[in-house]
Amino acid sequence: MMWGFGALFYFIAIFQRVSPSVMVGELMRDLSLSGAALGNLSAFYFWGYALVQLPTGVLADRWGPRRLLGFSAAICAFGSFLIAFADSSTIAYMGRFIIGVGAGFSFVTTLKIATDWFPTHRFALLSGLTVMIGTVGGLTGQAPLAWVVGEFGWRGAMNGAGLFTLLLCIGIIISVMIQGRPKGKAQGIDKKTTQPLMYEIAQALRQPQTWVLAAAGFTTLATLFAFGALWGVPYLMEVQGFTRPQAAGSMSLMLLGWGIGAPIIGWISDRFARRKAPFVFCSLVALSTISLLLYGPELSALGINILLFINGLFSGAVILLFATVREHNEARVAGTAMAIVNMGIILSGAVMQPLTGWLLDNNWAGQMDAGQRLYSATAFDQALWVLPLFAAIAVGMGLMIRETHGRALRAL
Image 1 (cartoon, rainbow, N blue to C red):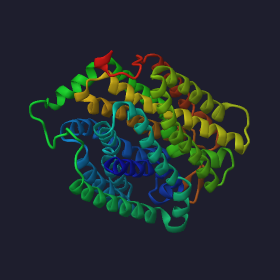
Image 2 (image 1 turned 180 degrees about the vertical axis):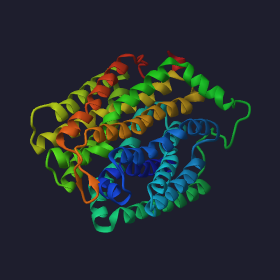
Image 3 (image 1 turned 90 degrees about the horizontal axis):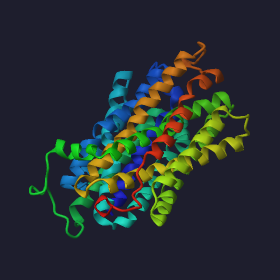
Image 4 (image 1 turned 60 degrees about the horizontal axis):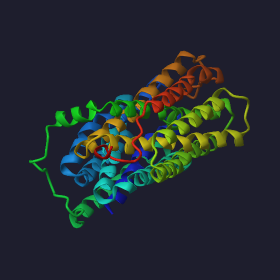
């Protein structure tokens, strides 16, 4: 039951992560934002998310994850309400950052619950299922949210998200009070085995593969964060002539592919006890598809949708990084190691969204419509080249991964 609550909170985290992509025009107009400023607003979520990753891992290792969920859901709800009532970019930045802080507890704590309650050989599959549920949140933050924004405005949408998160918080608190713990798991800190925070971080960072896997995560999801979660909808509207509902629906396919791909790739990896080869292959496919989409021959709407879906599908291989880092580190710092990898992934969004916004501003021709900047096809072409570049680096990082054959470090 607690894994379900954690996965549902991750649903909200991904919903909040991608929500600005269908509010680009409204946010730029109402808060007087440039492309770079909008990128920074969206990226504040990632900075807040990244900030809590190491504490989350250590707290999950020491105290267990369940008590963190209710607290973090309350934080996330408060941030959503704050941004809904923002009358300046400063307040909006604060709200977005607070949402990121709350959401930052969602994924690692859910993985820790999976570690505590389920057998080791199910971990990659459960990780994939968690991503799949989160992806449903991302899908909800595309076409359905675009409709809600059209009907009730972006402020009404954020108020609704805050209310839903608050109700989840109440449910988590009640569940923690009535549900038992997995057999053999003690409540609270085990002072005999607890190590200082910096020691646990140092232990995880001392393993070279932790760095490799964090860098692989950063580069693998650069496209999903910069394109799928922010600039994809404006790109399809301006360059391909899509309407906003059509563009939001097409970007939903990218997230849908990611949600489907993660559990399937996780299952295949578990089934054949391989981590490196599936990751490298999937990274090559992701590189090919984003390159064709942005710089290949002219495509039909169907062709664009197919490429978006395939790119998301094979980007789901990022889930293998969590199983791999878990297998490369001792069990007592597994949560911390997974948090470091997750921080690397999240920093990708924090860097790539403002970077692509800055590149768009540098190539902006000065066109405005109802108070918002309009970027030409040329501006997008000259700004989004960084996406294939980072996808290519992801392939290189994959080649540096040490194969574990699905076994923990102590079994190697």
